[in-house]
Image 1 (cartoon, rainbow, N blue to C red):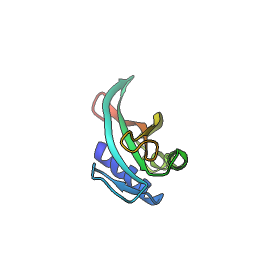
Image 2 (cartoon, rainbow, N blue to C red; image 1 turned 180 degrees about the horizontal axis):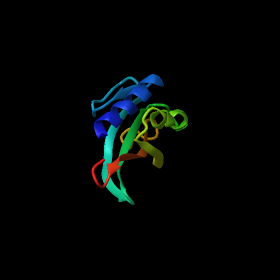
Image 3 (cartoon, helix red, strand yellow; image 1 turned 90 degrees about the vertical axis):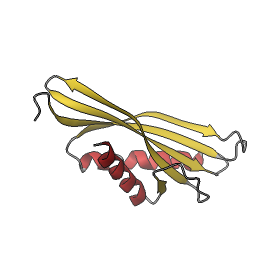
Length: 129
């Protein structure tokens, strides 16, 4: 399920027009984004099994401030529910982290945004449905 969910998130980010990578290869074309898995837990709740999958989006910018990253974060947030609408197993999507960091090597010029979403996905019942 993790790979399927990552594919859906990458497809959404590409649809929104972002330069998206699935690995840590450095790019000169800014802004660029990386999607990575930051957590995967299984939860038994009443009679159902739920996977909690956390995906982190790293946003790299060379804009001399936070404006570009904030706009990207807002755009993603305004469109992330498309994944839920297109996947009946997704119960909800929770943004639980958003940080903007300065690149210490370049001073305040380069910025790095980090946003994490947790997707709660119904896997089946405890009995195996």
